[in-house]
Length: 253
Image (cartoon, rainbow, N blue to C red):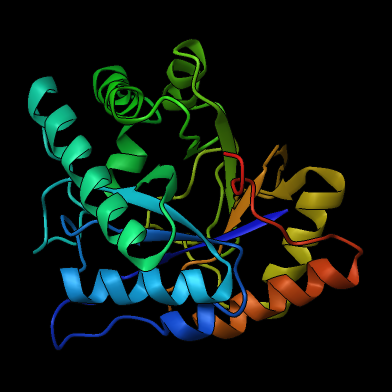
């Protein structure tokens, strides 16, 4: 199982999360591309740390929304969104190459991630941007989303993602961040949930129902309180259950 985390989200003197500690735990790093977070110096340093730790680099593309941290929906024209996404992938890929590696997958961030679950136009725009930049890049997204369906139709490799510290609704979608049960805080509980996810492919939704979740990668958020402890608990719980932690992308990709 792959463990991924959102990293490189500091900006200038402002720091968010402990990227160095998270890179000791995860196998894949979703590194910001400067549109929702991350300045060039921060992003280059994060790429360098990822390369030093053997962690795979992914481009976490987003709406152009620094003030809102990319968590506000933007009604883009398709051409603008495609160009913005290609720009972001290319920028991070340049920094990754300067650090000694390259971007090996793409994951949408925040409001864009949530939008492309159902928003066909924006999902198609993300697919088009990835395909035009490098059709060999896998894309990471929510199982059952329009994004992964369109990506598969376009010939892209799709990777299904689950969230360790997020609550789920009965339909398999995430509980909105501002709703009760959206965020989980107990590392032991979260680790137990993720072991169940990997071994049984099920989770308990916020309404108490048992839902089926097929995932190839687990996201442990780097910006939530106690993020490092949460990620370590998930890592250690999976390892104790005999699950090998390894990136879904890598050499030969």
